[in-house]
Length: 130
Image (tube, rainbow, N blue to C red; front, side, top):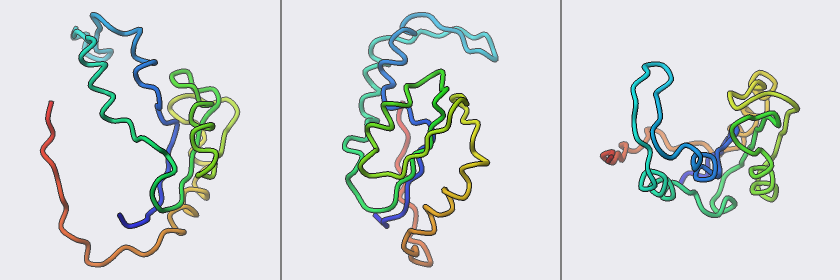
């Protein structure tokens, strides 16, 4: 809406492929609580697909760690190669170990954005649904 920038860090672009092996009974790591993750839960994730990555205004920056153990960074590099500045770091992990090295690029991305109107318009919030 405002043409402001977008910074993506190790984006999960194929959540269905990543989560497919987790169908069934699972356990929350920190509490031990058990829960069931079913096909309907997996299908519900499709509504969060952002569609065509190069539509819309504003500068884009993609940051990926090539050592990401959760997602395939190559998917993001291919998807955003034509519309984002792409920085790929050797090693690292899904937690993104190269944030400090990326700060200048992040600042540059947002400095390239047009100024936002002030005062800002009232927030348009939607009720979350489960």
